[in-house]
Length: 139
Image (tube, rainbow, N blue to C red; front, top):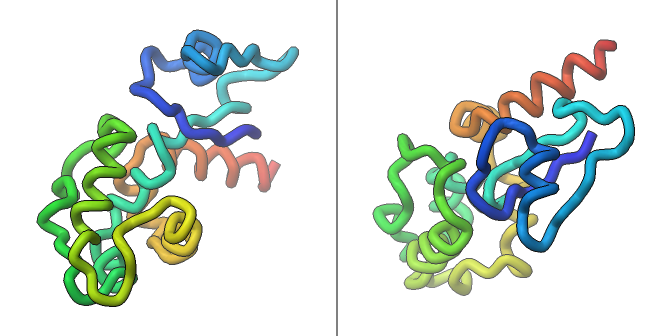
């Protein structure tokens, strides 16, 4: 199974078609691959962080401003990469204990800390991926 960022808004339902038609990708599906063999996360991995404001606040500490993040009820799969990066930078810009959000410095540390249940609840594509993965593991 392949799990990748969609990089852009997803058009249609087929992940392989999205990757084939996306400028810069043009990935063809392998022979005999189905749509359940390819899963698109969100436009960028950091979108998942937006499902867990509490972990972001704990991680960044004093000066973190959650009001600069999209509301938790907002569809994270529809938020552009630039908007996600901007929200993370603005919400963490006045932090006293850490530098403003930087992909290289913070992304994988946060990915290890966010609550996967919140990601699954906030992202239908993440929920589908986990369901498919569990089914195949039982398989």
